Length: 79
Image (cartoon, rainbow, N blue to C red; front, side, top):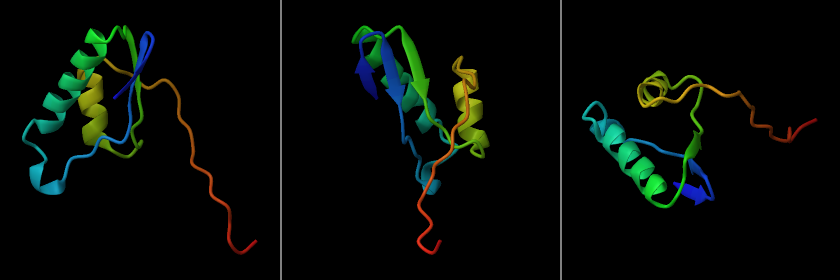
């Protein structure tokens, strides 16, 4: 979690397969957002892969919604 002024960002959150479906991601996310709030953040953003339905469900349940989509670009090694 990175806090910059009123903004807090959460990127790269992952749960190991053996520990999924135990509520750990929700607890961690709530801990991060509580930390961000205590550091003065009043707004938040996060990144999530659009095919990660479990993460999207978690973030929606926590009050987040999709703001926009973006793509990763890589150089083709054999143009």
